[in-house]
Image (cartoon, rainbow, N blue to C red):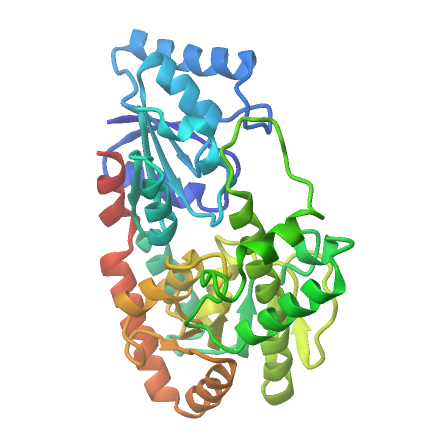
Length: 393
């Protein structure tokens, strides 16, 4: 199989291509000179040239591949009747609202089952639910190298660690909305505060808590794109804005509590407001620093972005694959696929996350065994070499 791989500098591209080659696929990299989603003549001609060259060589491409869905690539592949395989790791993912999502050449793999089901309910039959994966070969080797540095002993650099975006920046869209009437804002703020207290439910899906009137009154103060190229449910966009605001608040509030009680560090990109008691150590790159941090932290925290209503976030798989112990907030697919207290630890409220952090810091052998179990499960069930054949073949 020969694959034309669209590389847009996504963090996991090297891992995926390495696995593809291990599986015996021939992989050629293609990069666009423009960071756009629309089809341009330049992009069309560049892809066609690569396809024609491959045909002349006697080994034509079987498919074009990308992480996340690109409407322009789909349109090109539709014109030349070439399979276009994409694997979506963002949620929400705006381009799935493109009219090109229904092109017959598409094979779109989505890690969040709820998002996949929502698209199917709208008549989109080009989507499949597929969990995300990691490169088990690279991570096994990296873990061995890290342990060899300390003569085979497990050495920790941090007690409690969170790696991720706090979203208290330009992506916190709710705080950028100006003019919402005080009565509706006060009510929505109270729902956001209440939602923080429960990790296992989504108040914004329940139309009796935030109803269509609430959404309409907020929409009156928001401007949306109007190119006509996307079939966007703007009510759902508002709900995702509110979900992200919950994430902004709860990540900060949880870390504040962790900083009050434990030696806690944060790895995040960009300038963020300081959190008392939490040391911000900056950006951790995906390939090297991040797995080291996961392996050498006694307790890793995962606080799920609230717009991920069902799927297993890549961060969960990343932590476990590095042999890290993880306490995570929850959603349906985590509950279905991992055993609390065996593969990882699940917290269903902020108080439980704090209590389990204290417990597992004090029970080292139990914590270590859970980390071993979690790594074994991920290498067995969530490796690229296991999942990729289902994606591309």
